[in-house]
Amino acid sequence: MALPARLGRDFRWVLSSSWVSNLGDGIVLAAGPLLVASLTDDARLVALGATLQWLPPLLFSLLAGVISDRFDRWRVMLAGNLLRIVVLGVLTTAVLTGHVSIAIVLAVLFLLGCAEVFVDNTSSTLVPMLVARKDLAVANARVMTGFVTVNQLAGPPIGAALFALGHAWPFATQILLVAAALLLLSRAVLPPVERVGERRHVRHDLAEGLRWAITHPAVRTLVLTIFIFNITFGAAWSVLVLYAQRQLGLDEIGFGLIATMGAIGGLLGTGCYGWLTRRFTLGDLMRIGLIIETLTHISLALTRVAWVAMAIFVVFGAHAFVWGTTSATIRQRVVPINLQGRVNGVNSVGVFGGLVLGSTLGGFLAERYTVAAPFWFAGIGSAVFVVLIWRQLRHLDHDDDPAEAT
Image (tube, rainbow, N blue to C red):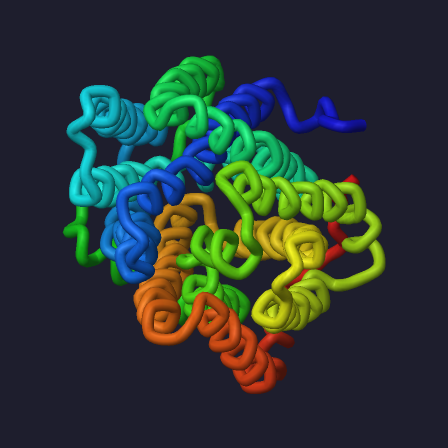
């Protein structure tokens, strides 16, 4: 069954909200880089746009984790999304009135990133609140299916098309979709979270989350792996719009199709995920994913043919779906509910710390050499890390159990 009844009504509302929100994010996924590229052709500024979106999670993820675990999670998401609506409104007005500049766009991207830190961290805690442990794999698969379908498949080409019609249209559309996602989420009834009776200092809560993540072998391995691999990924993907234009010769619509190809791969991963989890351990799926990502970077560095690159993005999309779903499932199975926000925050620091470092390096390499240089760095760096981390990945198998992801 596409959405088993056992997952419950409240999970359906949360899932619907997630899908609608992801459509808006997917639209801006294409429109944001296109707006930056329309204002400057400096690879360092283009990469800075990516850096400023990835910097807030590095700065605030730990704090966002504490807030998710301390306060009502619905109110946290409400406040964060209202801030997103205000910031998007400012950007839309600036574009419509002709007062938009690279400085305004970069500031907006940073503020959007700040709001999304708290929204995304809190959102990631909702599934284990509503779904039984044995159903986490299937629930996460459905969440990721929505992400792939609307964020990567439908959103980017819509965003690119709207951008071609008028630069303000994608951002105005996202405002409406964020509001709709909030309305859907308000229909879900979230169970209460057991919290300590004594209000402790924020430092105590931060230390507790960090200590738990560092001392748990599987979570520690996940954080270390995503940190290193996002340095290489961030270097390449921060200049993806320039790679598409200069090396592949694609226009705005062609750039939007890159994410579409990745989403098609994600749908293939969706269809195969149940089959994969019945035949491979979650640890083995992670190992295979690291190899695929390494080969992706090297292949993209080598090709100048658009259709070849599109085929590579399909394979990468399948890998990204399997990796994201598996990583979330492993983490949610082992982390106590009252620590989910803080441990997710530690994981986000690893995710976005790597992206910030990688995007900074990627912009420098692309400006100093060619747009292929960040992809060469990503491929070679990933290969070295795979060799170094391989034995540590055994920790992921210890917290594995048969996954039901049909």
